[in-house]
Amino acid sequence: MGAGAAGLWAAQRAGALLRENGRTPDVLLLEKTPRAGTKVLASGGTRCNLTTTLAPQPAAQLFGVAGGRFLKTAFRCLPPVAVREQFLEWGVPTVEAPLEKIFPESGSAKEVRDALVRACEAAGVEIQRGNSVQRVEANGKAWRVILEDESVIEAERLLLAPGGKSYPGSGTTGDGYGWLEELGLDLVPGVPALVPLLSPEKWVHELTGLSVQDAAVRLCDENGQVLGKRERPILFTHRGLSGPGAMDLSHFVARSSAKRGSGAWPGVVDYTMEIDLLPGASREALSEQLRIAATRVGNPSIAKLFADELPRRLVEAACVQAGLERDLCCNVLPKRGRHRLVEVLKGLPVPISGTASFDEAEVTAGGLDLGELDPGSMRVRRFENLFVFGEVIDLDGPIGGLNFQAAFSTAELAARAATSS
Ligand SMILES: Cc1cc2nc3c(=O)[nH]c(=O)nc-3n(C[C@H](O)[C@H](O)[C@H](O)COP(=O)(O)OP(=O)(O)OC[C@H]3O[C@@H](n4cnc5c(N)ncnc54)[C@H](O)[C@@H]3O)c2cc1C
Image (tube, rainbow, N blue to C red; front, side):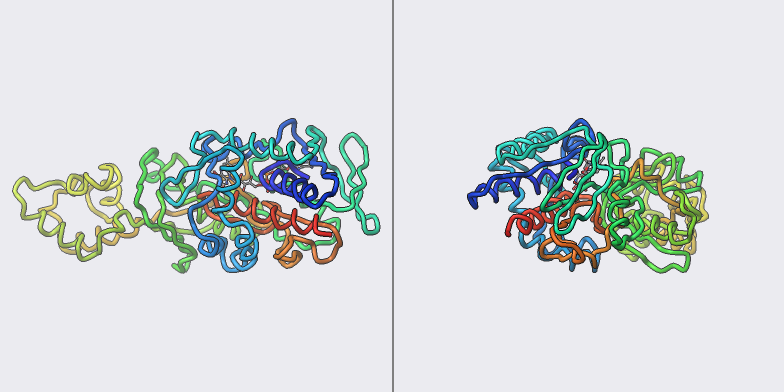
């Protein structure tokens, strides 16, 4: 149930596998909202970054230690390259883009969504839209699904993919967590992930609209311990930081907010995002560049010296953070100031106080505890014939087609296992 990326993939595969084995494709896909694949339509800025160029193992590793271990079988069973091949077979050729991304050649997320829906129809799947599941109950070895219109569906096997709590406006309001809790299963509290970061600092807000394409970022806690690193673009906003570099590390901040019991975002969290603005240059090289510039005819300002690599206003802000005048010329930069400026250019410290809310989160971190599931089938260990997969389980990956890939791969395993007996 849940006609998102995971539910659509599982339903079409289950229908196709049942047919292949000479059985009736008796698959019903229940969707709360009036349309299927809403998040697919919204994804990748409506271009849908549907998977990655990465091989299965490095792709799985991006889900952290536990997530990577859990996804090993799923990514081997349906690797990114197989997702591309499947979409090609459905008439959706794909293309590679920078940062290991894969998009449909047409640049149309609708084409991806429509292909999934057509595949369901071709496999004999019935999609029932606009009828929300209220409860699920174990009924011996079978399942009872109670719907909003009070009708009850009896099912031999139940496949749950109701998504998380991110982008609640699209229909995902965390309904699945309640059902899983009622069944006595363990959940990891859900927090927003792939979400912009908030900074209380005015100087950060004043840089709104500026981006650094080649940034290398480090998220540090209040003790200076590095929690995560990423080499991805960042964007300054009127509230803090966005862009993949910031969003990929946002789950650390949200998790800590939740642990400290603030329960709301933004919480009061002392984090610092250190941004290496010039990752291609060593400290020594930058220091030397500044020293030589001081002797150059014309005596450029520091901002002008880095004009080819960085926006002027950003270099000026870095000068201020290094305790220098914003429009200082290279020839009046004292040795100590040069040292401080190099440190700031290699790690501009942006204080972080929290994350934006679920309304802006691309995924939910947390969900059904991975220990409740058999990673080879997505079957819930404590129940027969119950399979849970997609965003509702405790898996979240960085930006770059990884989350759709996880949805498709876990759905593939569930469909295979649910139709095998
Ligand atoms: C704006 C945005 C952009 C994104 N871009 C990308 C991207 O480019 N690449 C990428 O890999 N990931 C992207 N993501 C993340 C990606 O959308 C998710 O990882 C993916 O959709 C998860 O799939 P899912 O099927 O598990 O959940 P969902 O897609 O959320 O689907 C769950 C479905 O279940 C339905 N449902 C919920 N409750 C009930 C109920 N009670 N009864 C019946 N049905 C119910 C929902 O309506 C929904 O249709 C993006 C997310 C957002 C919000």
